[in-house]
Length: 135
Image (tube, rainbow, N blue to C red; front, side):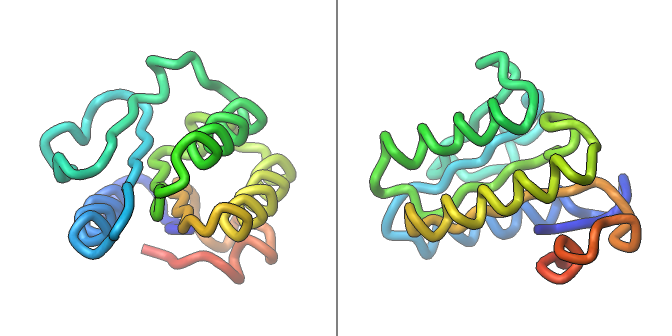
C-alpha cells in the first residue's frame, strides 16, 4: 500500500514502480486507473486499464475484477491500482476487508498487488498502517 494525501506523489511513485516492474518482470504488469491520465506515463509494456470502461464501482466489484485478471492470466506478476478510494469508497472497514482479500489473492496467484490510498496514514486503521508506505 502506498499512502498519502492528495498531491504527495503517490501516482508518480506508482508510475516509477510500474515501469520498473515492466523492465524486471518475466510476466505481465497491469495498471488500473480511474480515468485515462496515465496513458503517456506508463510503459507500453504494461497493460493499462481504465476501470471506468468496465463499470467497476465498489470493493466487491474491484476484488472480483482483480480475481478475474489473475485467473485469466497466469503470468501476471504485478498489479497496481491507482485511486483505490475513488473506486471502492472511503469506508475504513471496507478498506480493511478489501486489503485482506487482496493479500490472500496475492499469495494465491503469486502476484504483487499495490494499492494507492489517498489519505493521511494516521487516519488509517492500525492493520493498514502496519503494511503501508507513506509518501
